Length: 265
Image (cartoon, rainbow, N blue to C red; front, side):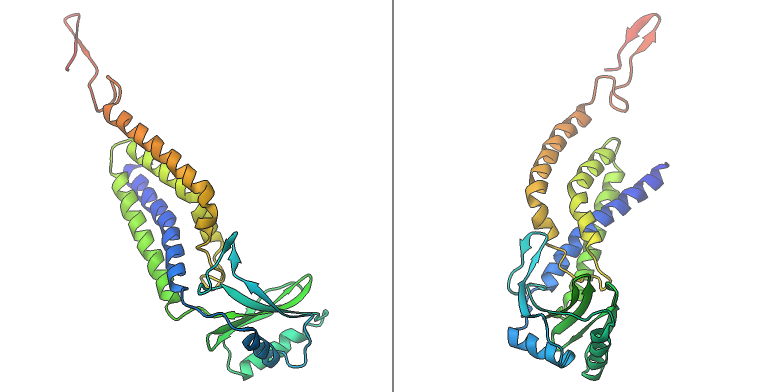
């Protein structure tokens, strides 16, 4: 691989890794300040969307919990109310909800693939509903919608992190060997677990569930790993600077002149 291609690959790697960090921070910041719907609000919304349908579980309040992390009361996804229904195999509730949601002015109505039947998702007045089908039946979830600044904050955080990662890895890629390999390996090992989970947790609407809890959930593993990597870096960089006595690009090899060894040093 040529030096130019290697530098481009380094920049792309940095953009992916730090872009995931920026996405998590942006989505956390943009999702702050929401107010979860109360039980009465959720009951009214469910009754309007599915009039006459009697839920098996009438309004189970689920507190925000993601990747083993409890969300704060004003985090996006911090609280929701779920209603479970026995819809059989005819998908009657799905069609009923689709008609009622369109008639009542719910916005962004989109299909949610499910088990046997497809569900629906839409937003209105700071609330969102999701009808999802699984092997255990149909579940209607009423939760708070994302704030107006959520999308802008998420995109801005992602672009900022990606630009910072590309710039950092591009600068490292211009250094002498083995600095790019050393720094790239240490940073990749330290960020790859959280970055991989962050990117895989994204949904079709950019973020359907909070992704920032990935990082505090992995903190018990990542923090000791980062400490070890820091010590490795502190140990390896002086080795790179001093090198061996006859290391390439540091101290030239001795030459033999008239049968005698001659050092340049």
